Image (cartoon, rainbow, N blue to C red):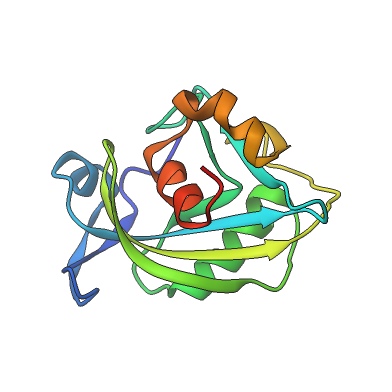
Length: 162
């Protein structure tokens, strides 16, 4: 499903670029690399989550952040965040950077820029990557907590949603 040869940006703990390696190698060796995660809230304060397809190379069929992705060679965090939300959800809202932080989940180690935005849709989500999207209240998230990706848990905890 995902391009295993795309060059990801490998960084140190201060987000200094160390080099560029294929996605497959970065994930296999659990090297620290750049990603983005985007939270989308509706006007009720609920948060949008996406259920990844079973074809995804990591965290298949798990609930994850509304949008996100890897920052590849030659790209910057903001650029990738805007591209990912347009490709995955079919919207182009104004994004606000919440925080850049190190996330260590069972699948990989990332330096992630976390963004948020507000939208009630409509959404035209990418059905090649996403099986379903749904807004969840803080209470509703408790019912799917064991189905969340590690990254989503970290992002939701940061925002006080779990």
